[in-house]
Image (cartoon, rainbow, N blue to C red; front, side):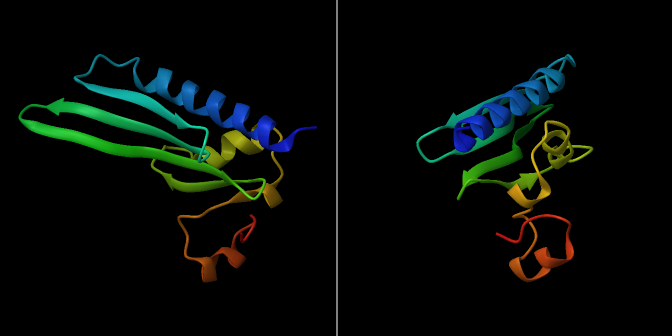
Length: 112
């Protein structure tokens, strides 16, 4: 199996599903996906306006590094790691990169 290719597909599928769900509400804030397959960075971004306030937030930042899925930022309700586990990604291939390196050892996931 081509592990990096498989993980790229899972990442894209997961972010597209989150994007579609976020855009179901009628809002002036749009959620978009940004896929950079050369650097293996995948983003879910919110942008738009709420009244007179400009909104531009990164909801999810996931990247593929050393054959593992690194979750750099995650502001979803349940946590995107749950989606990857449900899709069969082993805990040992998931890095919660938003935690400091010295604290990752206390999670059930990969350190790096």
